[in-house]
Amino acid sequence: MRFEQLKRHLEAKSFAPCYLIYGEESFFIEEIGQWFEESIIPKDLRDFNQTVLYGSDSSMSEVVERARQLPMMYERTTVIVRQAQTLMRQIAELETYLEHPNPQSVVVFLIHSGSMDKRKKVIKQVDKFQGLYECKPLYENELPAWLESHLSQRNLEIEVQAKQLLLSFIGGNLRRIKSEIDKILLAIPELTTIRLEHIEKHVGIHRNYNVFEMQKALSSGQLQKAISILNYFSENAKDYPIQMTLPVLSSFFSKVFKYHALSNKDEAAKALGVSPYFIKDYQNAARIYSMKRLTRILGSLKQIDLASKGVGQLNSPNSTTQLYQDLSLVMRP
Image (cartoon, rainbow, N blue to C red):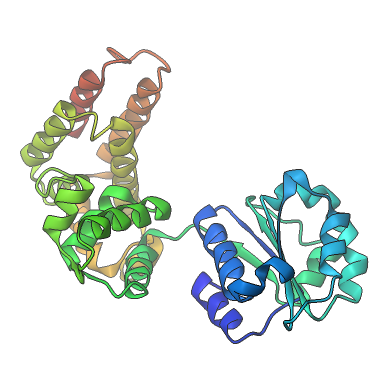
């Protein structure tokens, strides 16, 4: 289940006795944890019926003891364990409790870890209760829908170009996307539609000089425009660190390479993990960049990435200006 599906499940008050919320996407883990804290027990009854623990300061026996307690003046209690990954070594202690769980208690473990040993009996018990939920990072082609859903919950809309610019600049960092939206609303509380000028002014993305425009220039063969954008990044390296630019370029050229290799181009959007809206960019880029040239570009990008981290010797490893110049040379035929 995805996050929204889980929320609908919980809003119907169909609770499992225990939840293991884990995965690599900490933003979703924290959002789910906040939902459990704020949505199950009424605010005026939380002091009596809700316990929030931290894994590093607790033991599994303490969690079980709290879970067995009966509610006061309400129908259920909740026990929420944040940073629960430190308790996973003791998770077997849950087995006995889950054989006869307190029907009036909901126990939630928020686990910032990407793996879970599903062979263990206790994990199978939680899964049987439909309480096992993995928070995976979103694929690139899932980001627009997530953003629209997130904005809809806040009674906001966003223009297509503004959405594309925001996502191309920030990528899949959901926490930062939310933070930038909060920043815009703080400046314009009455806003109902986020436009390009709002992104440019409050997020600090230049509408003509950004990674989205650079990618479009590369896919359409406008090399000089792409180099001009890179030069702008170099002159404003504080706002456009090369560590932000390199992953965008590597992802773009890797997808063009993958597009070349596809036997069925009709399934390109799914194979590349991008919106069908952008497939034309990769089609155009594939005409411009041969697989041989792409191999050279990707190898050079890896070298520049290492140099940006002070590994190896590529001209002047500590000079952002030099690294951007090297990047411009990579783009040339």
